[in-house]
Amino acid sequence: MNAIERANKAKAILESPLFEEAFETVRQRLIAGIEDAPVAATVQAEDFRKCLKLLRSVRQHLETAINTGKLEAFKLEEAEKRRSNPLRGLFR
Image (tube, rainbow, N blue to C red; front, top):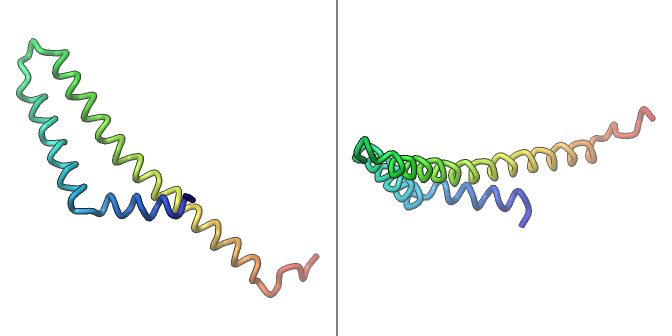
């Protein structure tokens, strides 16, 4: 799968209402876990915080795939413009 295909699939996932619902549900539960943890339960709160960071990493990975695909599409578009330029090679 090339970068553009990956970008399209990542975008479809991020824009999916089901993904957004699942992401927000898990996020809210993790935050509630941090808030509800007793002050003495620092290890438990730290585990919730790590899970929250991992959850953000999933979204960030998908966003990176989208941006990489956009960059690849732009490069291909620019290369095509250069190839189809009627003045290409005229000044060599």
